[in-house]
Image (cartoon, rainbow, N blue to C red; front, top):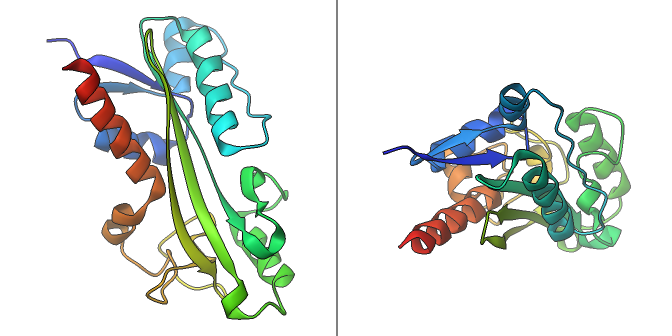
Amino acid sequence: MKKETIVVASSNKGKIREIKEIFKDYDVLSIKDMEDMLGKKIVVNENKDTFKDNALEKVRDLYEQVGKKYICIADDSGISIDVLNGFPGVHTARWMNADDHMKNLELLKRLENVPKNKRQCHYTTVIAIKGKEIDKIFEYTLDGIISLNVRGNNGFGFDEIFELPNGKTLAEITMKEKLELSPRRKALDMVIEYLKNYKN
């Protein structure tokens, strides 16, 4: 039986690998794969003010451009720091033209005199999915605090400054432990459950 195809609004290899791992019963294609298949450029926007609206904008843009026979998935994720009024939030990936490590050092600088009990932060992922009769979003948030310094080598993004209740940063735990906590993983698991029930 031919597998159903899911198109992901991303060409990020790590993200596609993670999604393929979870969506084993589907044929998972990236934007790049679709561009090669269709012979045209695909453009998805994310100009909104919330993770939810960004994910919806991306998935609807993708769906319109690839055609109605696919299920499309888009996500938007980021870190929000309470004492900075939710900054960087939806701008997590693009608030500063620098690599992740430099951005993390800058965030630590902004929190220099903030005591540990006031450094609460939230890592949110919203996944939007769209198909012929599907238009849904799934959301998951992991709470933590911003560490006092950069720690750990196992992560990327803001992992090295996102401290868990056990005192370790996301970059100090194993990949297996991280996947069990990952908001993207949790939200994708919700999508899988939904699609299973949707078919039955």
